[in-house]
Length: 494
Ligand code: ADP
Ligand code: MG
Picture 1 (cartoon, rainbow, N blue to C red):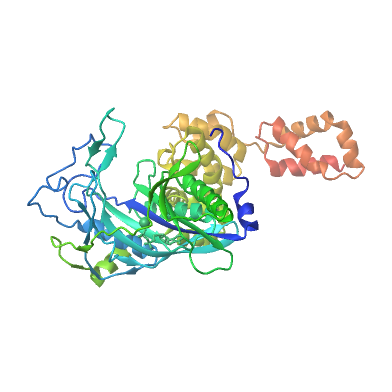
Picture 2: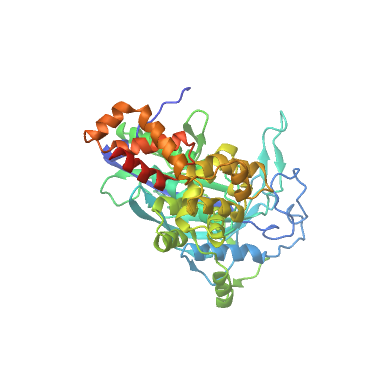
């Protein structure tokens, strides 16, 4: 159906419903290791199909897996970042099932004995702070990929992804509105990127999310039958799918129909979900400990070493920016949205920009430039040192902010060799505190608006600001505003 039916103001729909939404999320995050979980095949995305497949990835008889220590280290790192309990004694198990993209016929996974237990992620929904509780995080290997668009008759299999290390991050069924799911995933992705655990790229499938959704009467404590929605390739689609499912489950219930436990797929084009398979009978994966891999212990020393290298996390950094530099929550959140952005801010300060000015410049002109160019802070052409030179011209009153950001910054970007001071002087952008010039501009403005001047004299003192603005305009932003204001008041009140 096109255009798709819209669900207007979902939050309001939910508020007035007698049903409560219950959601638990399962997120798969591909670990940023160079090699796979149990062999040295590379993990690069986008390689020619079946070029990153040694005998181990292909599951040839007689091959043996070897554990990738870096993958375990990243799992511990995320666990520490999310306040999980790190389990010391670990093992992998085999999850047995048949599928064409699974050459071994089983997936090696910690499903039955996760490396991280508990933990949580804080989110801010408007002014309300909530904590999304995690159930566990475990390590597992990825399967290959079925390619349905390569051949008219056959499905092709690419095994490059087989054996790539994943974390599965599982929440408790504690999410009760679609917006919270959106905020949780945004926050989780930020932390994954910040810690270097995963690149969080949902389009490339390095972060994937399944949403488990059920409803119950408000006030009930037992969980209802759930559906699990897969193939959600963006955070926005997770939110959409939850809204659609809530609506569908409520309708089914009100029509007196039975909700069946099933796996559904999200259809982004039609904004619907459709059933993939029923899950009424629990699948039996015949889990047993992987005999080819030893038990492994995580030492306190290892945990301490990972802790010692942990970067300051975005939430703590945002708090510190607010306390130490007096930044607003809004500015601090923007500056800690990515680690590179925070680093740019800190480098600006290190170069001599006052913190408030640094925050204003980044969330103002710098962000506008990045949006316009469709690029990220790493591609910003001015180094913190060059930008600081420009900012300090404003701070010292030599240049107006509007000229500095609107004229000088673009010129500086176009001339990577020039210095801000030389360029401003060549382009005659500096503010003037030449009294004769300013008096001339003030006179001109007062003559231009005789009626306003009369109104002012009758007591409409608020017009002073308007006159000042006109002087600024006339001088093309070059008039020193402090001197302008004092001359202006002197002339107005004479
Ligand atoms: P499985 O491993 O079979 O998928 P789990 O019990 O580990 O099942 O749960 C997976 C996810 O589903 C978790 O995020 C959990 O919070 C969520 N979940 C479980 N039951 C419900 C329910 N009735 N409604 C919503 N979410 C649920
Ligand atoms: Mg599941």
